[in-house]
Structure formats: structure tokens, C-alpha cells
Image (tube, rainbow, N blue to C red; front, side):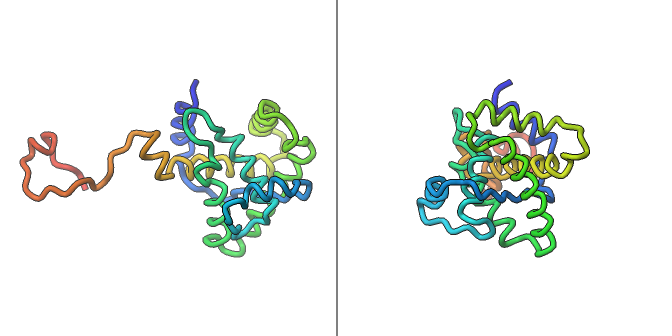
Length: 190
């Protein structure tokens, strides 16, 4: 199954809805080089620290890596998450998000996730996603929420929509006086 099919099915399965608990990554072991890379173009995080946004960037790139289309971080998925949590979520919602994010990062730190090769990172996330253990429920839910939001933000990105997905601009070009035949034989639904 290729990446596009996975994205299509994941979007269908999740409804590409933006759901509750994104997850909040608290990782103190990240080096300053990664934080500098995440802030290289002057982006200032709204919710996460510089180290957290760097770790978030790494995580979304494991979820949606670069293939024949850009990676999640190349289209700013990590920044959209940061803005959503920092500027849209209520204080209660931010606290709930932080709880899940913290649990997820603690779990990933125990596995040395950010120091592993991509194949090993994918295996760690697949194992977590398939876990039925009640002890990891908060961590699993936080990861699934982050994954769902990553996919939703990725698929709703203008660059991805126009260059990598089927794209029909709506409402399209305005043509005041055309026949039904010129409109494809049917009237357009509103």
C-alpha cells in the first residue's frame, strides 16, 4: 500500500476531523541544534517551547515522512498544531492536551525514540498504536490524536491540496450566463 492510499484510508477512517487531545511533548533531552533548526526561519512557538516544537517536528515527520510529496514539517504541520493549541484551545483544553502530550513524550523518551533510526521509530509507534494495555491508554490516545491531527492538517494544506491531491477550486471561475450543457449537463449543487 503506498503513502497516498494510507492517507486516503486514514482520512476516511478518522473523518479527517480535528479531534480533542493532540498531545503535548515535554522532552528535556533534546539538543539545541534541533531547536535551532525548528526556529531557523524565525518562527516563534505559541504554545510549545523551542525544544518541544523541535520534537513535535520530528514526530510528525515520522508520521508523514517525505516521499514523492513533502513531509509534514515541510508544510508546517507542527506549526499549525502549535497555533491551534496555543491560540484556539481553551485553558482547560490546553491542560488536557498537556497531560496527554507529557505522557506520550515520557513514553517515547523511555524508548530513546528521538535517537533511533526512522524504521525503529515507526516500529515503536506501530507497537504503541496496536497496544491494548490499559496502562498505556493515555499515551496511545495522545499519539492517535496527534496522528489524526497531523493527517488532517497535512491534507488541508494548500500546497498539498493543489499539487498532490485532486483539486477542483470551489466555487471556481464565475460564468454568469452559460447553458446547462456548458456546466456539464447538470446544475451544480450549492
